[in-house]
Amino acid sequence: MMESNEDLALCYGSIQEVYKDGTFFRNVITKLHSGFIFDKLLLQFDISIITSMLRKSILLDSSLNFDNNIRASEEFCLFMQLASKYKIGVSREIMAKYRVHQTSLTSQSLSILGKERRYTLDLIIKSTPILNYKYKKQFKGKNFNKIFKNIKPFFFSNSLGLKIIESGLLNSKHFETIRQSVKKILKKTGRITFFCFPQTPKTKKPLEIRMGKGKGNVAY
Image 1 (cartoon, rainbow, N blue to C red):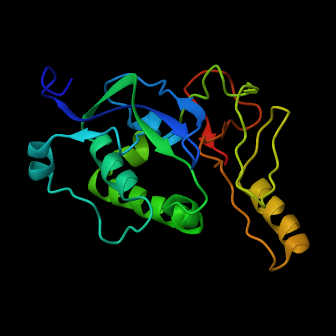
Image 2: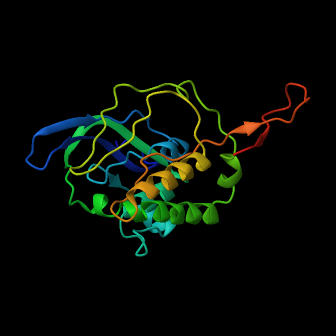
Image 3: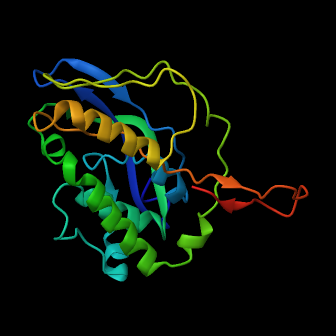
């Protein structure tokens, strides 16, 4: 793929997740297509570092490398900076196996992933300011209110989780209310982790305004 498409900065494939003892857990097949997929990766980052291949000439020209300030999501920082400027190649073929276990670096660093991803997005906005306006208002898409019943929840041992069973809209205030309510119960005996994020901006037009003339202002 990289040899036939010289404009690709990175290419990656799908993975198969296995448990610690090597037994099958699930196949993680990417649903994206090759091209400029930065906006898709903002919603769901599914680039696996064990299947990725980078073009060295583009890294040298753009002076990009793994950031020393990042501890848990180095690949997210580098790959998202590349995706904001270059095309990404995607293959749905399973190319590697990924072992899921509780002692992995990702599992132990969930508390800092949010801060590191914000750090990455600030770097991208600083280097490419136009992205801050290009993706300010987004279309929700046809699956915005759809419930995906085939998703298998996965929790490590000695952990509990809340699963949404009805469709609806949640904003940052709802997440903060949930966090405070659960924190009062757990106190200092547990840790709270959210595996979702209110990433889609919601627009709203003022009352008594005629239809047309584009989307309204971002409400939340």
